[in-house]
Image 1 (cartoon, one colour):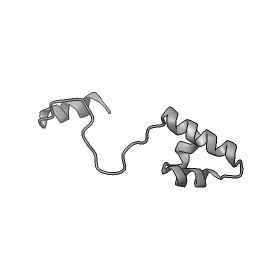
Image 2: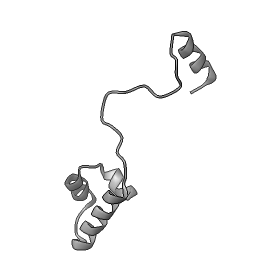
Image 3: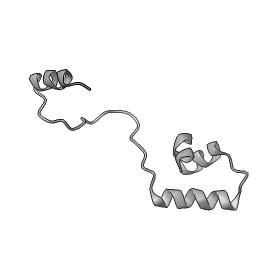
Length: 67
């Protein structure tokens, strides 16, 4: 995002630099609780696949990879 973009936004009436609410899927937060849960699941069954872990805890595969 450039200075030109922000100048145009403020001319249109925008009053803040904060991100506006967007529709769609919310961002996921990798909490220590989620990390512990996945760690325990992997130790209990090392054959679990990333996709299975993601489905069980309702997060994306990439979030599981980051953990």
